[in-house]
Image (cartoon, rainbow, N blue to C red):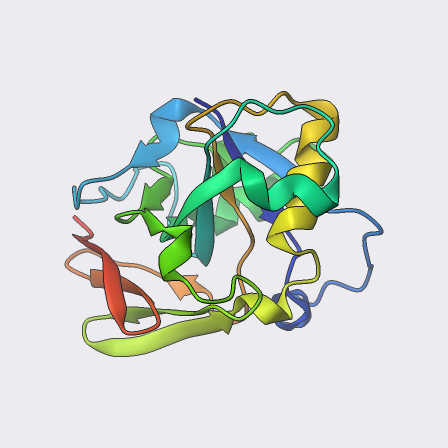
Length: 204
């Protein structure tokens, strides 16, 4: 099982992070299977960072083997969706970027890919208009809509499949909108698609 993730996919987040360049293609990175955190298990703050940020994203699950998938057929290759958190060690990421070094240690560490309960894609009326949000301790801290993606889910699937064979069970994190921020011990995170709670866990 592979975990793909897309960066820079919402203009609001790019502005928030003061990014001044535009990518002509999706920005792609990967997380190992050890990054997966599911089933409502707690997220334990790692000892190598003082600045762990949440990034709330829609996550889709691949349901068919595919390579070089045409964008017009991409919707056939995933059948479930949920909300997830791409945890980021922001201080490590800054340090690595300043040195011109890869930053996997800031994005791909153990338990850095939290996912909620998957629901059938058919239960989401329009994948181009999906509202999602994150509450922390009962307060909404981040919200987005898939219609604001720079690259749609179908475009992402087509792009990823140019380089990597997609297999059943692979996951794709589709990018985060504005509103990212830090987490701390005892925070209670709940993620929603519309009013449907799919993600629920605590920080330890």
